[in-house]
Amino acid sequence: MMTKWILGTCVAVGLIAGISIAVGGMFSPGVPSAVEDSGDSTMPGSSTATASSTTGAEADPEQPVGASALQQASQADKYLFAMFWQHENEQAAAMKQVVARTAEMSEQADAVLVQVTNPAEREFVRQFRISPAQTPLILVIAPNGAVTGGFSHPCEPQDLLDAFTSPAMAAALLPLQEGRLVLLCVQNDSTDLNDEAMRGVRDFANDPNYGKLVEVVMLDPQDSAEKSFLRDLRIDPQVSIAMTALLLPPGSVGTVLEGETTKELLLAALQACGPGGCGPR
Image (cartoon, rainbow, N blue to C red; front, side, top):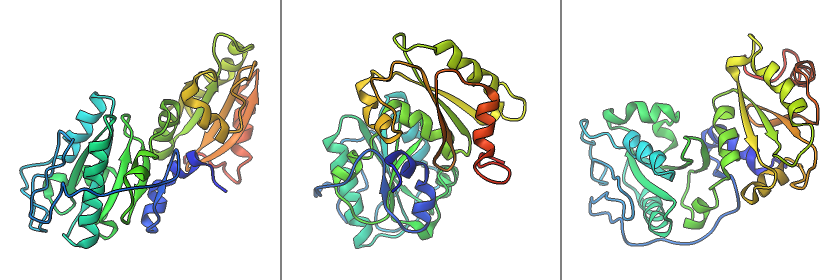
């Protein structure tokens, strides 16, 4: 069974297949009457809304809202519930209500409705590789832009809230979703062999063939917010020696090294995934 963080890296693949997935938990409740079929697309509890009505009419091409909503959420260190839709129907209406209610329930998230046929939203829709055929669709987007959950059918507010992840997990998900490698460095002032662990990480990250395709993410094993992520990676939060995990797109663990690392060990783990390795080409 794939762990939660691996599910997060595969969001795009799952959504194309019409599968709803989430990272950071399971799913659960609700629906308000905040978003009606009347054509009012304002999202209660959110600073953003669609520029067009929710009746299925063509959106105002001069009123993009997706990118600005994402920017505002990121600046406020909030998640964004982005609802992509094309035509008004029963399924879309139900999903809009879930998004509206969830935004009201959480101070950690904003919400936005994005009509995919609005020309002004073209770049935002393209950024998340959404096609009209995939709609209606809800993405849960972390403050750094990583997609941590996707729902292609009516769900419950708790489903969206359960898609929130830890900071280190979100930091790792974004480069993986971009097709890059992640070197996750699990250490703090109390762990031994920190410098020895970082030596190989730095050499690997500075390699001319891989440097631009590698993201280094630091994780404090004593950070309670990261317990679930560490558990998924099978790393003990009480570890006393620095650990380094090589994470590979779209979502797998190449290796986990204890203590000292070398570029050669990391490259060997990369190449061991199969012919040509399993990192980005």
